Image 1 (cartoon, rainbow, N blue to C red):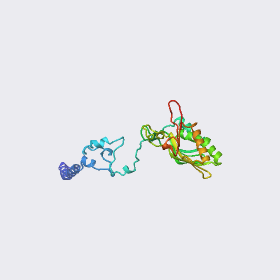
Image 2 (cartoon, one colour):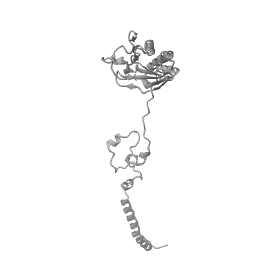
Image 3 (cartoon, rainbow, N blue to C red):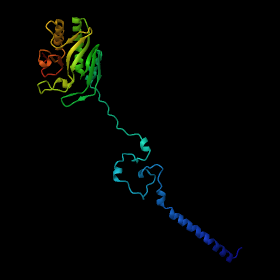
Image 4 (cartoon, one colour):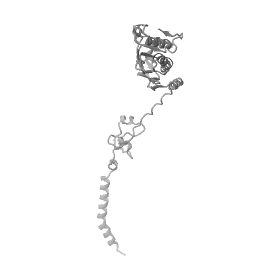
Length: 278
């Protein structure tokens, strides 16, 4: 067993080494503070709010940045995830359901062989609008040039007149079908000439017919025919008179100067239910 003087000498010899180890540990702790550890940033710059541990040494985010948060963390421009993350879009509003009357009107157009397409609602002001307009381009084999923008009810009324009156009259007098109906105006936001009253054209309930081309290449101009144009005059007089059974307003050559070269047909609703055929 070593003597006491030997133990004291061994303890004295190891004291410098122990002191050196303690000093090294103290220096290491002093150079590796909590602030230095938390100062390490992720490889991707995601900003303070997306860090795993908040650092008290970092200044708080500006109030403006906090106000921009909308359920997900605000990413800085340097974050590549910002480019790949899908943009959140507002859901599209459901298209309005077409009224039953409009749907039925379109079924009748199909039965008559009318070629048409639905258009977006027209709203050019309180006096110029069509909620459910259609563009009518043909009635059976009879083309309409240019396509007429009207209400479905106006398209249906005009189609019935064409098939039940105009086509039979052309076959009776010219032994030919109708190839093309050239119209001069359908929907148009305007007043009646010389008046402050809005025209039925402004609601898509009117159409102006300039001339009619037949399959045999005969061109029937609505403008007042010559004195010896008996067949042409007879056709125009017939279809004009018969139009009064379909439309509530029928105007043409002889009514006034503005209507010297076309038929004006409309379905204006009057309080007394009267029809103006002139």
